[in-house]
Amino acid sequence: MTRADPTIHATARSGRAAVKPATGAPPTGAPAIEAQPRSAAPAEPEVEPAVQPLLLHSLVELREIWLPLLAAADARSVVEIGSESGVTTSLLAASVRQRGEGTLVVVDPEPGVRPDPGDGLEVQIVAGYSPEALDGLAAADAYLVDGDHNYATVAAELAAIAHAADRDRRPAFPLVVLHDVEWPAGRRDQYYAPERIPAPHRRSYSWDEGVVVGVAGVVDGGFRGAGAFAWATSEGGPRNGVRTAIEDFLADRPELSLHVVPAIFGLGVIIDRGAPWAATVRELVEPWADNAVLGRLERNRIALYLRVLELQDEVTGLNRLRQRDWSKVDAERSALAERELVVLDRVAELERALGEERRTSDGLRADLAARAEHPGRPQLLRRR
Ligand SMILES: C[S@@+](CC[C@H](N)C(=O)[O-])C[C@H]1O[C@@H](n2cnc3c(N)ncnc32)[C@H](O)[C@@H]1O
Image 1 (cartoon, rainbow, N blue to C red):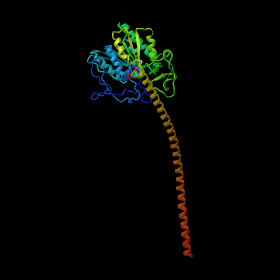
Image 2: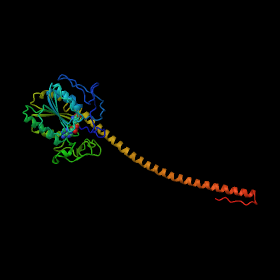
Image 3: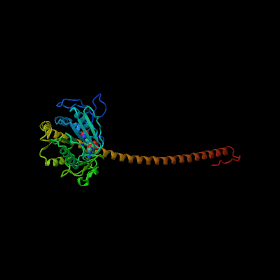
Image 4: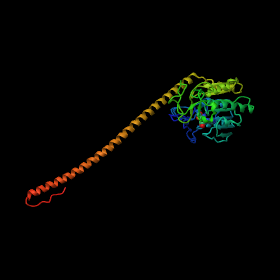
Protein backbone atom coordinates (compact mmCIF):
# COMPACT_ATOMS: atom_id res chain seq x y z
CA MET A 1 0.00 0.00 0.00
CA THR A 2 0.94 3.51 -0.44
CA ARG A 3 3.12 5.27 1.98
CA ALA A 4 0.57 7.90 2.22
CA ASP A 5 -0.99 7.63 5.54
CA PRO A 6 -2.45 11.06 5.40
CA THR A 7 -3.51 11.85 8.87
CA ILE A 8 -1.16 9.50 10.61
CA HIS A 9 1.43 11.03 8.36
CA ALA A 10 2.27 7.97 6.74
CA THR A 11 1.55 8.86 6.26
CA ALA A 12 1.17 9.61 3.64
CA ARG A 13 4.72 10.92 1.23
CA SER A 14 6.91 10.12 4.13
CA GLY A 15 5.59 6.82 5.37
CA ARG A 16 8.71 4.83 5.50
CA ALA A 17 8.49 1.53 7.21
CA ALA A 18 9.70 1.63 10.75
CA VAL A 19 12.65 -0.66 10.30
CA LYS A 20 15.76 0.19 12.18
CA PRO A 21 19.11 -1.02 11.00
CA ALA A 22 20.35 -3.78 13.23
CA THR A 23 22.63 -2.51 15.98
CA GLY A 24 26.04 -1.83 14.56
CA ALA A 25 24.80 -1.74 10.97
CA PRO A 26 25.21 1.45 8.95
CA PRO A 27 22.13 3.66 9.30
CA THR A 28 20.88 3.09 5.77
CA GLY A 29 17.29 2.65 6.91
CA ALA A 30 17.35 -0.84 5.50
CA PRO A 31 17.40 -3.97 7.57
CA ALA A 32 20.62 -5.90 7.62
CA ILE A 33 20.24 -9.40 6.28
CA GLU A 34 22.61 -12.19 7.02
CA ALA A 35 23.34 -14.83 4.41
CA GLN A 36 21.26 -17.87 5.28
CA PRO A 37 20.56 -21.36 4.10
CA ARG A 38 17.76 -21.53 1.55
CA SER A 39 15.09 -22.96 3.79
CA ALA A 40 15.87 -20.91 6.89
CA ALA A 41 13.61 -18.04 7.94
CA PRO A 42 14.94 -14.69 6.72
CA ALA A 43 17.04 -12.68 9.12
CA GLU A 44 14.85 -10.73 11.49
CA PRO A 45 15.42 -7.01 11.14
CA GLU A 46 15.07 -5.03 14.29
CA VAL A 47 11.58 -3.69 13.86
CA GLU A 48 10.08 -1.02 16.03
CA PRO A 49 6.89 -1.81 17.92
CA ALA A 50 3.84 -2.20 15.73
CA VAL A 51 2.46 1.25 16.53
CA GLN A 52 5.39 2.79 14.68
CA PRO A 53 4.12 3.60 12.09
CA LEU A 54 0.52 3.34 13.22
CA LEU A 55 -0.54 1.92 9.86
CA LEU A 56 1.56 -0.99 8.64
CA HIS A 57 1.62 -0.63 4.87
CA SER A 58 4.91 -1.89 3.48
CA LEU A 59 5.61 -5.24 1.89
CA VAL A 60 8.46 -5.47 4.35
CA GLU A 61 5.84 -6.36 6.97
CA LEU A 62 4.92 -9.42 4.89
CA ARG A 63 8.51 -10.49 4.27
CA GLU A 64 8.18 -13.78 6.14
CA ILE A 65 5.66 -14.78 3.50
CA TRP A 66 7.16 -13.65 0.19
CA LEU A 67 10.91 -13.98 0.79
CA PRO A 68 10.72 -17.77 1.20
CA LEU A 69 8.72 -17.93 -2.06
CA LEU A 70 11.55 -16.23 -3.94
CA ALA A 71 13.98 -18.66 -2.37
CA ALA A 72 11.80 -21.65 -3.26
CA ALA A 73 11.54 -20.44 -6.87
CA ASP A 74 15.31 -19.94 -6.82
CA ALA A 75 14.73 -16.43 -8.15
CA ARG A 76 18.06 -15.14 -9.40
CA SER A 77 16.69 -12.29 -11.39
CA VAL A 78 14.10 -10.11 -9.72
CA VAL A 79 12.33 -6.95 -10.83
CA GLU A 80 10.90 -4.70 -8.15
CA ILE A 81 8.24 -2.23 -9.29
CA GLY A 82 7.72 0.50 -6.68
CA SER A 83 10.44 0.71 -4.08
CA GLU A 84 9.50 3.81 -2.07
CA SER A 85 11.83 3.97 0.96
CA GLY A 86 13.78 0.98 -0.33
CA VAL A 87 13.30 -1.37 2.61
CA THR A 88 11.97 -4.05 0.26
CA THR A 89 14.75 -3.28 -2.23
CA SER A 90 17.33 -4.07 0.43
CA LEU A 91 15.58 -7.32 1.32
CA LEU A 92 15.50 -8.27 -2.37
CA ALA A 93 19.18 -7.46 -2.83
CA ALA A 94 20.04 -9.69 0.11
CA SER A 95 17.71 -12.40 -1.18
CA VAL A 96 19.28 -12.44 -4.66
CA ARG A 97 22.76 -12.45 -3.13
CA GLN A 98 21.79 -15.53 -1.18
CA ARG A 99 21.31 -17.34 -4.49
CA GLY A 100 25.03 -16.80 -5.15
CA GLU A 101 24.58 -14.55 -8.14
CA GLY A 102 21.78 -12.68 -9.81
CA THR A 103 20.25 -9.44 -10.94
CA LEU A 104 17.96 -6.99 -9.22
CA VAL A 105 16.14 -4.39 -11.30
CA VAL A 106 14.40 -1.59 -9.43
CA VAL A 107 11.75 0.44 -11.22
CA ASP A 108 10.50 3.55 -9.46
CA PRO A 109 10.38 7.21 -10.48
CA GLU A 110 12.22 7.96 -7.23
CA PRO A 111 13.97 4.81 -6.05
CA GLY A 112 14.56 4.93 -2.31
CA VAL A 113 17.68 2.82 -2.21
CA ARG A 114 20.35 1.95 -4.76
CA PRO A 115 21.89 -1.25 -3.46
CA ASP A 116 25.58 -1.64 -4.15
CA PRO A 117 26.32 -4.26 -6.76
CA GLY A 118 28.95 -6.87 -6.04
CA ASP A 119 29.20 -10.23 -4.28
CA GLY A 120 27.39 -11.74 -7.25
CA LEU A 121 24.67 -9.10 -7.38
CA GLU A 122 24.06 -6.97 -10.44
CA VAL A 123 21.84 -3.98 -9.88
CA GLN A 124 19.93 -1.99 -12.46
CA ILE A 125 17.99 1.06 -11.35
CA VAL A 126 15.33 2.33 -13.72
CA ALA A 127 14.21 5.73 -12.50
CA GLY A 128 10.97 5.77 -14.42
CA TYR A 129 7.37 4.67 -14.54
CA SER A 130 6.09 1.18 -15.08
CA PRO A 131 4.72 -0.24 -17.34
CA GLU A 132 6.69 1.81 -19.91
CA ALA A 133 9.89 1.32 -17.90
CA LEU A 134 9.55 -2.46 -18.30
CA ASP A 135 9.96 -2.18 -22.07
CA GLY A 136 13.19 -3.77 -23.16
CA LEU A 137 13.99 -5.33 -19.78
CA ALA A 138 14.95 -8.98 -19.89
CA ALA A 139 12.38 -11.38 -18.48
CA ALA A 140 13.03 -12.10 -14.79
CA ASP A 141 12.47 -15.12 -12.53
CA ALA A 142 10.32 -13.09 -10.18
CA TYR A 143 8.56 -9.73 -9.91
CA LEU A 144 7.49 -7.75 -6.87
CA VAL A 145 4.72 -5.44 -8.08
CA ASP A 146 3.90 -2.51 -5.81
CA GLY A 147 3.92 0.63 -7.95
CA ASP A 148 0.81 2.50 -9.05
CA HIS A 149 -2.22 0.61 -7.74
CA ASN A 150 -4.76 0.84 -10.48
CA TYR A 151 -6.31 -1.39 -13.11
CA ALA A 152 -4.64 0.18 -16.14
CA THR A 153 -1.14 0.06 -14.65
CA VAL A 154 -1.33 -3.44 -13.17
CA ALA A 155 -2.99 -4.89 -16.29
CA ALA A 156 -0.24 -3.39 -18.45
CA GLU A 157 2.46 -4.59 -16.05
CA LEU A 158 1.19 -8.16 -16.15
CA ALA A 159 0.95 -7.98 -19.94
CA ALA A 160 4.53 -6.68 -20.11
CA ILE A 161 5.72 -9.48 -17.82
CA ALA A 162 3.98 -12.08 -20.01
CA HIS A 163 5.36 -10.49 -23.16
CA ALA A 164 8.94 -10.55 -21.83
CA ALA A 165 8.58 -14.18 -20.70
CA ASP A 166 7.31 -15.21 -24.17
CA ARG A 167 9.89 -13.14 -26.00
CA ASP A 168 12.76 -14.59 -23.94
CA ARG A 169 11.29 -18.10 -24.29
CA ARG A 170 10.97 -18.66 -20.59
CA PRO A 171 9.81 -22.20 -19.79
CA ALA A 172 7.38 -20.90 -17.18
CA PHE A 173 5.57 -17.72 -16.25
CA PRO A 174 7.62 -15.97 -13.56
CA LEU A 175 6.69 -15.90 -9.89
CA VAL A 176 4.76 -12.64 -9.44
CA VAL A 177 4.05 -11.16 -6.03
CA LEU A 178 1.69 -8.19 -5.96
CA HIS A 179 0.72 -5.89 -3.14
CA ASP A 180 -2.65 -4.18 -2.53
CA VAL A 181 -4.92 -6.87 -3.87
CA GLU A 182 -7.40 -6.37 -1.00
CA TRP A 183 -9.22 -3.33 0.37
CA PRO A 184 -8.83 -0.47 -0.43
CA ALA A 185 -7.06 -0.75 -3.82
CA GLY A 186 -8.19 -4.29 -4.72
CA ARG A 187 -11.43 -3.08 -6.31
CA ARG A 188 -10.81 0.65 -6.54
CA ASP A 189 -8.18 2.46 -8.59
CA GLN A 190 -5.63 4.51 -6.77
CA TYR A 191 -3.53 6.98 -8.74
CA TYR A 192 -0.17 8.47 -7.84
CA ALA A 193 -0.16 10.38 -11.12
CA PRO A 194 -3.60 10.19 -12.74
CA GLU A 195 -2.46 12.37 -15.63
CA ARG A 196 -0.16 9.50 -16.67
CA ILE A 197 -3.08 7.14 -17.19
CA PRO A 198 -4.70 7.56 -20.62
CA ALA A 199 -8.08 9.22 -20.12
CA PRO A 200 -10.17 6.32 -21.50
CA HIS A 201 -8.59 3.99 -18.90
CA ARG A 202 -8.82 6.38 -16.00
CA ARG A 203 -11.80 6.63 -13.70
CA SER A 204 -13.05 9.85 -12.22
CA TYR A 205 -10.98 10.49 -9.14
CA SER A 206 -10.60 12.69 -6.11
CA TRP A 207 -7.46 13.91 -4.38
CA ASP A 208 -9.32 15.22 -1.35
CA GLU A 209 -11.97 12.72 -0.49
CA GLY A 210 -11.30 9.45 1.26
CA VAL A 211 -12.60 5.90 1.36
CA VAL A 212 -14.17 3.80 4.09
CA VAL A 213 -15.16 0.16 4.16
CA GLY A 214 -18.68 -0.53 2.89
CA VAL A 215 -19.11 2.73 0.98
CA ALA A 216 -18.61 2.45 -2.77
CA GLY A 217 -18.28 6.21 -3.24
CA VAL A 218 -15.90 8.59 -1.55
CA VAL A 219 -16.44 10.46 1.70
CA ASP A 220 -15.25 13.56 3.49
CA GLY A 221 -12.56 12.15 5.74
CA GLY A 222 -11.81 8.43 5.66
CA PHE A 223 -8.57 6.98 4.31
CA ARG A 224 -7.16 9.55 1.92
CA GLY A 225 -3.95 10.54 0.23
CA ALA A 226 -3.49 14.11 1.44
CA GLY A 227 -1.95 15.06 -1.88
CA ALA A 228 0.12 11.90 -2.30
CA PHE A 229 -2.45 9.93 -4.25
CA ALA A 230 -6.01 10.10 -5.50
CA TRP A 231 -8.86 7.58 -5.27
CA ALA A 232 -11.28 6.59 -7.96
CA THR A 233 -14.59 8.02 -6.84
CA SER A 234 -16.31 4.64 -7.03
CA GLU A 235 -15.35 1.15 -5.94
CA GLY A 236 -16.12 -2.03 -7.85
CA GLY A 237 -17.28 -2.67 -11.36
CA PRO A 238 -15.24 -3.67 -14.35
CA ARG A 239 -11.65 -2.51 -14.89
CA ASN A 240 -11.34 -1.07 -11.41
CA GLY A 241 -8.61 -1.94 -8.92
CA VAL A 242 -5.55 -4.16 -8.64
CA ARG A 243 -7.34 -7.44 -7.91
CA THR A 244 -9.68 -6.96 -10.87
CA ALA A 245 -6.69 -6.41 -13.17
CA ILE A 246 -5.09 -9.65 -11.93
CA GLU A 247 -8.31 -11.65 -12.29
CA ASP A 248 -8.88 -10.35 -15.82
CA PHE A 249 -5.30 -11.23 -16.71
CA LEU A 250 -5.70 -14.76 -15.34
CA ALA A 251 -9.12 -15.30 -16.93
CA ASP A 252 -7.74 -16.92 -20.08
CA ARG A 253 -4.59 -18.36 -18.49
CA PRO A 254 -5.69 -21.53 -16.71
CA GLU A 255 -2.06 -22.50 -16.15
CA LEU A 256 -1.74 -19.65 -13.64
CA SER A 257 -3.22 -19.59 -10.15
CA LEU A 258 -3.68 -16.69 -7.76
CA HIS A 259 -3.18 -17.02 -4.01
CA VAL A 260 -4.25 -14.15 -1.81
CA VAL A 261 -2.96 -13.47 1.69
CA PRO A 262 -5.54 -11.22 3.37
CA ALA A 263 -3.14 -9.15 5.46
CA ILE A 264 -1.71 -5.62 5.28
CA PHE A 265 -3.82 -4.62 2.26
CA GLY A 266 -3.47 -8.02 0.64
CA LEU A 267 -0.66 -9.93 -0.97
CA GLY A 268 -1.30 -11.74 -4.24
CA VAL A 269 0.94 -14.50 -5.53
CA ILE A 270 0.71 -15.75 -9.10
CA ILE A 271 2.04 -19.26 -9.61
CA ASP A 272 2.51 -21.05 -12.91
CA ARG A 273 1.21 -24.56 -12.18
CA GLY A 274 3.74 -25.95 -14.65
CA ALA A 275 6.81 -24.30 -13.10
CA PRO A 276 9.29 -26.68 -11.49
CA TRP A 277 8.97 -24.76 -8.23
CA ALA A 278 5.16 -24.53 -8.32
CA ALA A 279 4.40 -27.21 -5.73
CA THR A 280 6.94 -25.91 -3.20
CA VAL A 281 5.82 -22.31 -3.58
CA ARG A 282 2.16 -23.34 -3.31
CA GLU A 283 2.87 -25.32 -0.15
CA LEU A 284 4.61 -22.31 1.37
CA VAL A 285 1.88 -19.83 0.54
CA GLU A 286 -1.16 -22.01 1.20
CA PRO A 287 -1.24 -21.69 5.00
CA TRP A 288 -1.36 -17.90 4.62
CA ALA A 289 -3.67 -17.72 1.63
CA ASP A 290 -7.34 -17.02 2.37
CA ASN A 291 -6.44 -17.46 6.02
CA ALA A 292 -9.59 -16.67 8.00
CA VAL A 293 -7.72 -15.48 11.08
CA LEU A 294 -5.52 -13.12 9.05
CA GLY A 295 -8.61 -11.84 7.25
CA ARG A 296 -10.36 -11.15 10.54
CA LEU A 297 -7.31 -9.36 11.94
CA GLU A 298 -7.02 -7.27 8.77
CA ARG A 299 -10.68 -6.22 8.87
CA ASN A 300 -10.27 -5.31 12.52
CA ARG A 301 -7.02 -3.42 11.84
CA ILE A 302 -8.66 -1.41 9.09
CA ALA A 303 -11.77 -0.71 11.17
CA LEU A 304 -9.57 0.51 14.02
CA TYR A 305 -7.48 2.60 11.67
CA LEU A 306 -10.54 4.21 10.14
CA ARG A 307 -11.81 4.92 13.65
CA VAL A 308 -8.50 6.56 14.50
CA LEU A 309 -8.80 8.72 11.38
CA GLU A 310 -12.35 9.63 12.36
CA LEU A 311 -11.23 10.64 15.85
CA GLN A 312 -8.29 12.59 14.43
CA ASP A 313 -10.65 14.40 12.08
CA GLU A 314 -12.94 15.18 15.01
CA VAL A 315 -10.01 16.57 16.98
CA THR A 316 -8.91 18.60 13.95
CA GLY A 317 -12.47 19.95 13.62
CA LEU A 318 -12.62 20.83 17.32
CA ASN A 319 -9.21 22.49 17.11
CA ARG A 320 -10.44 24.56 14.18
CA LEU A 321 -13.50 25.63 16.18
CA ARG A 322 -11.33 26.41 19.18
CA GLN A 323 -9.00 28.39 16.93
CA ARG A 324 -11.98 30.35 15.62
CA ASP A 325 -13.16 31.00 19.22
CA TRP A 326 -9.67 32.10 20.18
CA SER A 327 -9.55 34.46 17.21
CA LYS A 328 -12.87 35.97 18.32
CA VAL A 329 -11.63 36.31 21.91
CA ASP A 330 -8.43 37.90 20.61
CA ALA A 331 -10.38 40.39 18.51
CA GLU A 332 -12.59 41.28 21.48
CA ARG A 333 -9.54 41.60 23.70
CA SER A 334 -7.90 43.98 21.20
CA ALA A 335 -11.10 46.04 20.94
CA LEU A 336 -11.32 46.22 24.75
CA ALA A 337 -7.67 47.19 24.98
CA GLU A 338 -8.29 49.98 22.46
CA ARG A 339 -11.31 51.21 24.40
CA GLU A 340 -9.30 51.05 27.60
CA LEU A 341 -6.63 53.25 25.99
CA VAL A 342 -9.25 55.80 24.96
CA VAL A 343 -10.69 55.80 28.49
CA LEU A 344 -7.23 56.13 30.02
CA ASP A 345 -6.45 59.06 27.70
CA ARG A 346 -9.70 60.71 28.73
CA VAL A 347 -8.96 60.09 32.42
CA ALA A 348 -5.49 61.61 31.97
CA GLU A 349 -7.01 64.61 30.19
CA LEU A 350 -9.57 65.10 32.97
CA GLU A 351 -6.91 64.70 35.61
CA ARG A 352 -4.82 67.35 33.88
CA ALA A 353 -7.83 69.70 33.76
CA LEU A 354 -8.63 68.96 37.40
CA GLY A 355 -5.02 69.72 38.35
CA GLU A 356 -5.27 73.07 36.59
CA GLU A 357 -8.58 73.83 38.28
CA ARG A 358 -7.02 72.98 41.62
CA ARG A 359 -4.04 75.19 40.98
CA THR A 360 -6.37 78.09 39.99
CA SER A 361 -8.58 77.69 42.97
CA ASP A 362 -5.50 77.46 45.23
CA GLY A 363 -4.27 80.78 43.75
CA LEU A 364 -7.63 82.45 44.24
CA ARG A 365 -7.79 81.17 47.74
CA ALA A 366 -4.30 82.58 48.41
CA ASP A 367 -5.35 85.99 46.94
CA LEU A 368 -8.41 86.07 49.06
CA ALA A 369 -6.40 85.19 52.14
CA ALA A 370 -3.89 87.98 51.36
CA ARG A 371 -6.71 90.50 50.88
CA ALA A 372 -8.21 89.49 54.15
CA GLU A 373 -4.87 89.93 55.86
CA HIS A 374 -4.08 93.35 54.28
CA PRO A 375 -7.44 94.88 53.35
CA GLY A 376 -6.05 98.33 52.33
CA ARG A 377 -3.24 97.07 50.11
CA PRO A 378 -4.03 96.62 46.46
CA GLN A 379 -3.64 92.98 45.41
CA LEU A 380 -2.73 91.63 42.06
CA LEU A 381 -5.31 89.11 41.07
CA ARG A 382 -3.65 85.89 39.99
CA ARG A 383 -4.35 85.09 36.49
CA ARG A 384 -5.89 81.79 35.87
C1 LIG B 1 3.50 1.70 -2.14
S1 LIG B 1 4.99 2.32 -2.57
C2 LIG B 1 6.06 0.97 -2.61
C3 LIG B 1 6.38 0.46 -1.26
C4 LIG B 1 7.41 -0.60 -1.18
N1 LIG B 1 7.23 -1.63 -2.18
C5 LIG B 1 7.28 -1.20 0.17
O1 LIG B 1 6.54 -2.16 0.31
O2 LIG B 1 7.88 -0.67 1.12
C6 LIG B 1 4.74 2.70 -4.21
C7 LIG B 1 5.95 3.21 -4.92
O3 LIG B 1 5.68 3.10 -6.30
C8 LIG B 1 6.18 4.22 -6.95
N2 LIG B 1 5.42 4.36 -8.18
C9 LIG B 1 4.30 5.06 -8.43
N3 LIG B 1 3.92 4.89 -9.69
C10 LIG B 1 4.81 4.05 -10.25
C11 LIG B 1 4.96 3.51 -11.53
N4 LIG B 1 4.10 3.77 -12.52
N5 LIG B 1 6.02 2.69 -11.75
C12 LIG B 1 6.90 2.41 -10.78
N6 LIG B 1 6.80 2.90 -9.54
C13 LIG B 1 5.78 3.72 -9.29
C14 LIG B 1 5.98 5.36 -5.97
O4 LIG B 1 6.92 6.38 -6.23
C15 LIG B 1 6.27 4.65 -4.65
O5 LIG B 1 7.63 4.76 -4.33
